[in-house]
Length: 257
Image 1 (cartoon, rainbow, N blue to C red):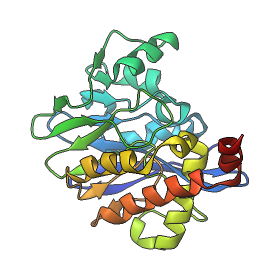
Image 2: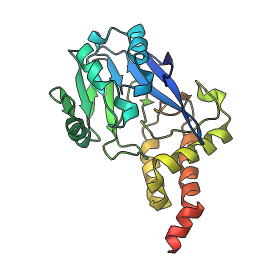
Image 3: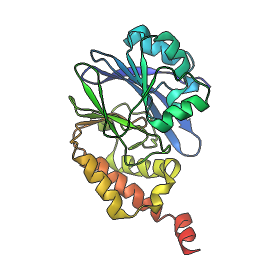
């Protein structure tokens, strides 16, 4: 199966590279990587294998790979770094940014680590005319996940967090019915972060409040159509997803055992 790859503007000097992956029995999952055309251009994640050569071809339409200076790997899942080795070869001047555990996993996968730089949550990466803050997102399926928050345009590249299963291929959040987004986020959380059922509400809401304090103006999740504008509806959707997973029959049965 080859998945087509398209690209579109997703913010000021930000481009989104997209495929739509069918998840049998669950719907359609948007899968995004992102290019930030800063003074030092940065690619966030490197796609999934079913995109084949389409991923690099779409990237070439936006930038010559040799002009990349940074590659940010949010986490090492196959849908985020399938073309990692190929892009490293095509981008000889690019340094790789990830978390400590992410760097270790890259090594365990026998992928090149000689250009890897480790960031911790709260540290920043300077792209010249833009800065990226490393953030631990409120949900994730891999513990190494580091999501960049771009401080100039206040864009949060949230990795798996705020992802949602869709019933159709949507490019922009304005096309999505809010109720469908909330339901799709709950379905995604049940698959991607079922541990959220064990998190108490007060602690989770503290994490959401910390994220709200960054005042994101745009959320570019790896698995959600482009979201611009009010951030609180997404936070409410995520809290509703936590409650939905916690109240699922399987979780209630496990708690009662």
